[in-house]
Length: 235
Ligand SMILES: Nc1ncnc2c1ncn2[C@@H]1O[C@H](COP(=O)(O)OP(=O)(O)OP(=O)(O)O)[C@@H](O)[C@H]1O
Image (tube, rainbow, N blue to C red; front, top):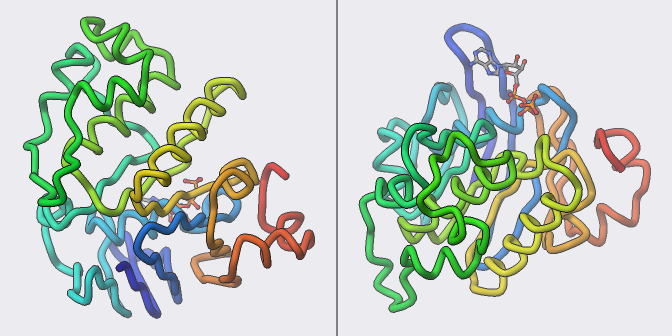
C-alpha cells in the first residue's frame, strides 16, 4: 500500500534523506529502526508532507503519489500520523481532544468510535474529563494514538511510541499495537529498540545517515545480531 523509492528530502537547503526505500503492505507491521538523528522522523514527515520537502524519488500510497499534497489531504487518504512529540491539546480534556478529528467513515463497517478507543486504552476512559496536559507521558501517547484512530486510518505511522516511557507503560503501548495489528491496521513504526520488533514486526528497515541500509523480514533482522548491535540504541 505504501511504496517509497529513492526518497530524497530536505529541510530548507539541508538534505536529511538521500536514498530511502521502503514498503508497507496491507495488514503489515513494519519497523523503521536506526539511531538518533539518522532520519526516521524525517521519513515519516516526508510521508505526511509535514515540515520537510521531498526533493527526489517517489512516495506512493495505493499507487498514487503523496508528494506535494497538504498534510490534511494525506490524512484524508487514510494515513494516521502520531508524531514523536504527541501534540495533544494540553488545555483540553481527553474527551475534547478525541472530538477534534473530523471522522472519516472507512466504508468497512468497523469504524472507530470514542467508546471503542476507550476499550483499547482503559486509562483514557478513566480520565476522560481530565485535562490532557496533566496526563503522564504514556497516557498522552495513548491519547495521541486514540485521536488518530478516530480518522479510521488504514495505515498508522507511529514515531517512537515508547520514547521516554517507563517499561510497564511501554508494554501497555506495545499491547495496544499488537491489538491494532490483530484488527488489521497496517503500521510503520519508528523504533530504537527491539521491543516492538519482537512483539509484532513483520518487516524491518534500517536507516543510517539518511539512507536505507537494510530491508528484510523481522526474522532475517533478528538472525543477524550485528545489525542490532550496529544500528540500535537499545538491544
Ligand atoms: N526541523 C528540522 N530542521 C532542520 N533539520 C532537521 C529538522 N529535523 C531534523 N533535522 C535533521 O535531519 C536529520 C535527521 O533527523 P531525524 O529527526 O529525522 O532523525 P531520527 O532518526 O528520527 O532521530 P530522532 O530519534 O533523534 O528523532 C538530522 O540531521 C536532524 O538534525
